[in-house]
Length: 313
Image (cartoon, rainbow, N blue to C red; front, side):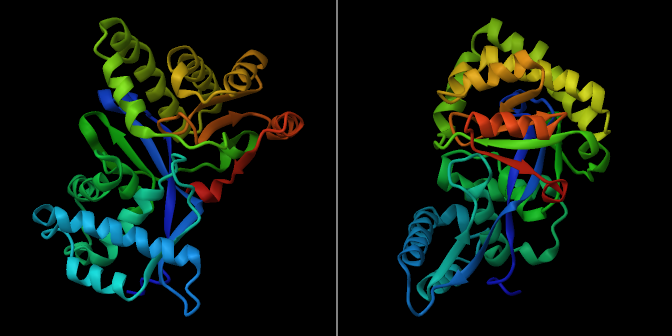
């Protein structure tokens, strides 16, 4: 296997942020506009290459300090040998933007240095567990879903009780009259404190009930409609989801973007939702008329990125 040529992609959690922590469905997809691969430093050794190699050394030291947990999962000696030979990770995936930068790295590490990665593992749950272990070195605690998406390079549907299944999305009909886009908030998000805040709020019966009785049903309705190209019902559902997040996830919407979010709701022209944990990074948007939405975003000088259907498969 040629580690210098194999690509690993970012991901987008389309639906299920936060509610998945209370056993709702979730739908996550590889995002092929952002990609990464292993390589080795050139003879010139640019500053970017040196930094990448240094970061891999730091991560390897983390693995080594917890070798009892990782020696059964990774060939640590092979990984160390390549790092010492100038291994780097070339990546266009923005860091702390909710699109899977650490997930892609963990997927690449396991694919090339995992002890069982060549055995065509089919147990998604067990594979997710191993990848979760690797990503814990970045976030303290990881579900393992992000690196799993990058590893299998296919959309994954999470059902209740953490059941996983690969899905095939037929999106041509959806994209005939609708569009998906990303808003760049131009600030980084920090996942851990936002997730901890959510879990703390869930100790309130009132807040927890709103998640269970309102957020989970509309999230699952969005997934059902999106996967089945039920466009009219999808946009009814995404409007409800967007409104719920606007009202209940105030601290997770980056400063300066609540007005834009509310503008979409009030105009009924586009709808925003969190892309991952929020707090920064990207916001995810849906619209029936991208041309009109594009004109508005450009006029208001918001940085955006339209998502093509091919980048979501």
